[in-house]
Length: 166
Image (cartoon, rainbow, N blue to C red; front, side, top):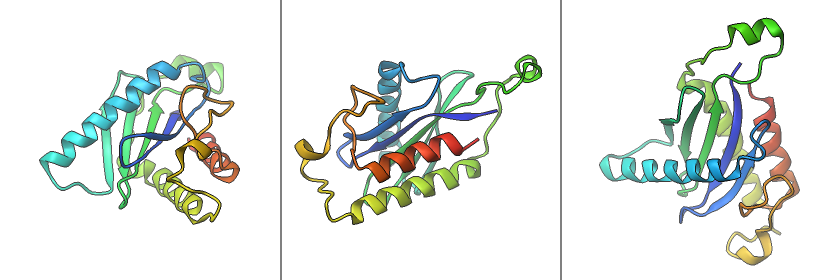
């Protein structure tokens, strides 16, 4: 069963605003940092070549296990979802039958819409100041090398979205 391995919210200037890793990838910070940055390069290449829609679709298939999908907001913020196509089996019989699943692009639209809604809710918070980087970016307990948005409601919503999608 496919599951989300990583969710990234990337600013207009390609600065990571929030990156959340999900089990079993909690200790794979460097690998996902590289993957997120390579996705940004792909988005930039697509922007130069043609006018792009909000739904960027499949950005890259890393291997037979991981695939990266993207979404571009109207304000230039990029949402990235990296999916583990194999996932973790729920039973021993699923372990024998585990193989990669091909996702259709509409399968992730609800995830991107939920992430965009959570980000809009964050921006509507009068105590959130997106331009004051020193005050709002602190490492979270979950991922220590990425700068993080520390708003509790936003973080909880991102974790809920990542854990509930399957």
